[in-house]
Length: 280
Image (cartoon, rainbow, N blue to C red; front, top):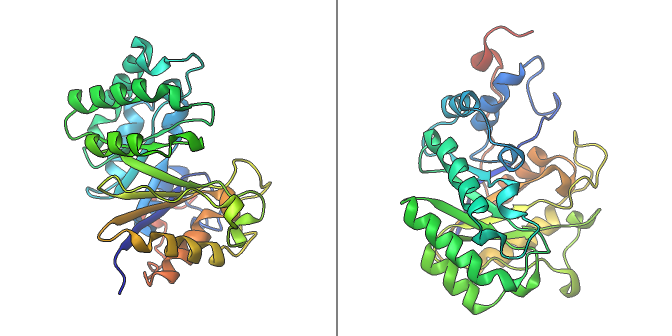
């Protein structure tokens, strides 16, 4: 018996060509179309700069209540170059500004704090304090943390995130072509860590490793099946899975592969005119 449910399934948003969007769909209608086709979406524009109030308003109109939306925390928060950066007033102020800006989106949004490989265990106390202050100051805040250094995989970190209700993100940083193969023991991605709530799986590959992102370069089915086996021990957990273009070349197609593997039906095509008025 299947003991977990995978879904929502979606991808990290990018500006894809007509192989995903209906021909002639205007740029301002693409988000609404994406939301109609998938059940999860991760936006990384917030990593680079705070979106304008007008942009947040447009997102709020396009994304229905209950949709599984996640946003990356600003780079200035997670990628400070100085040791102890998270304990600084600058980091806390930047995070508060970000949370204030996205507030109109509601409380269903998950904020992803993605830390670089240089973020190592010496920052554990600063991280725990940062997360604790954020949760205390913003009741209902949903946070997820992604580590990219193996030193974080230890019981004390798991316990701290569990106590704070923070999701531990599992990431598959498959190199070129690796998404088509079952991982070996020596290069297997770290497994998901259960902190008591939702499981967040990012199949993201390595950024910029493929020149094109308008079609799948590899059939990721063997590796997707491997991940489903890894998830089999997460009894009663809901798994949010987002896929990036750098995983196998074209995230929407790979997301649909995963849908078929778990028996989730793909939605029927929807005419662009339903989203954006006249077609150019």
